[in-house]
Amino acid sequence: MRRVLALLLPPLVACASSPSPRPAPDLPSPGGAPSSSSSASVTPRGSRNTPSLDAEVGALDAKQVKKNFEAILKKSEACQEDLRKKDPRLDFLAGDLRIELRIGEDGRVLSAALPSSSVGDLRLETCVLDAARALSWPRPEGGRTGLASNEMHFPMKGDREPTPWAADKAQPTLARAPLQPCAARGAVEVTVYIDTDGKVIAAGASAPDPERPETATCVVKAIQGLQFPSPGSWPAKVTVPLR
Image 1 (cartoon, rainbow, N blue to C red):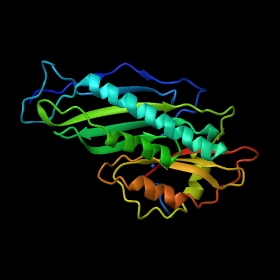
Image 2 (tube, rainbow, N blue to C red; image 1 turned 180 degrees about the vertical axis):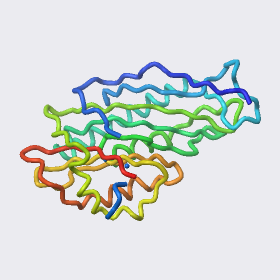
Image 3 (tube, rainbow, N blue to C red; image 1 turned 180 degrees about the horizontal axis):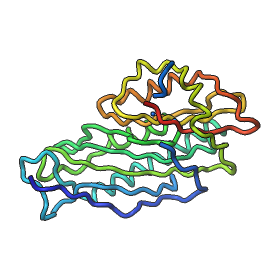
Image 4 (spheres, one colour; image 1 turned 45 degrees about the horizontal axis):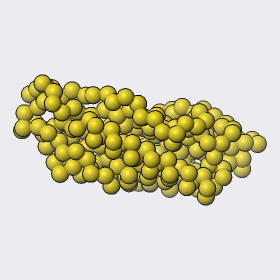
């Protein structure tokens, strides 16, 4: 079978703002706009390496894919602003995520996953996924499905970043979370903003398994009621990889 090449589109840039913390990438066993600069990779059309008609993965129109990701960035920026208006503490909401899509023959999204995310708010992560699913995508050419991915950076809008915590500072607390029902294949990243009293301000999680999109919601619900150690006089942010 002929190979399918990947094309890296030039970075997309929306409104610039303040810098944000960079991401950290497992479930600790129970007993871790947008100035949105983003880059998208797709399988290109018109290549000499375009697969035959019976191939599984086909080529996508790069221009249309780029246009769709720009639309997702605009929608995501609006979601970020809405969250900040509802809770001023989320001025320091920031981070990076990666979205991966599988497109069907009719141009609809068959599956959407977030292999990584350090954004720290499930509502914003869900907004990104919903925006992607709502769009009509180019139909794969030369195959039954098409693949597209994008990396997004959400800069902090406030004046002061949360205190960065190392993953091991939060792992003892996360180990008490009832995560057993949150089945997932692959590692899940959880990012938590912790208030000065040790309570959770906001939390988010990656969703690496497109067959179990509910995993991220399950993980976030399990940790929202946890009591973390106080970070001191200013909120903290921590990203922990869960296995």
